[in-house]
Image (cartoon, rainbow, N blue to C red; front, side, top):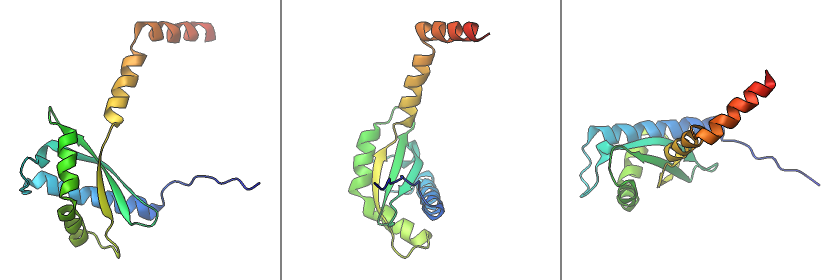
Length: 134
């Protein structure tokens, strides 16, 4: 039986993803996007993952402050052609990937893990384990 191993993204995928992240980040920070209801200055592009064939890119967004990130992502996806056009003008690519905006849940997950680790019961277990090792 042949065992398949999952490979990570290639160097080119990582580089292109970073270029797209920077282009979109600059676009959001300039605040010259005029889409009704969109607040780009309150959005942060945390990561861009490119498909191996470069046909699409998942753009992970984190809202800053008390902004409704899900509503902002709906607006971004509804107007993704504008962002794709801008990426195509600023990143040298043979094929400009289709952009799919998604919510980045990494921050919520890390807060949850921090809360778990700071739970008194978990802390007591960790300290008990340390005492046993010593």
